[in-house]
Length: 82
Image (cartoon, rainbow, N blue to C red; front, side, top):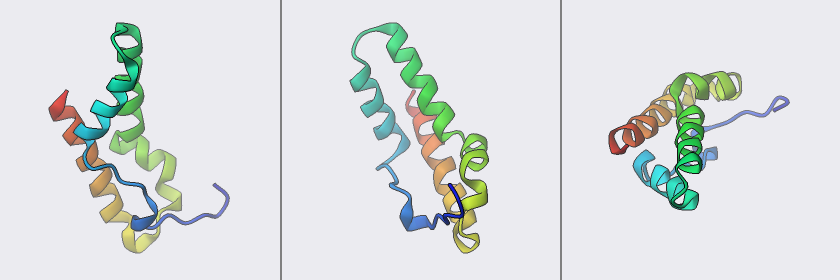
């Protein structure tokens, strides 16, 4: 991202982390290796530290705390549904 700024409403937020995880796993089918990779990819993508590392510099300052809180809630929701 070259200079792009991300506001809260710019992020395509999922219904919940649990819902998004179910969608990811539904696409994985019954293959254990594929399911394991889908889990890992999801948790790496939505882990708060990784989210901040990837997008932190681009977040609009007034929305920063709200975006990080929503990303964290998404991660926790999926973790609880695991």
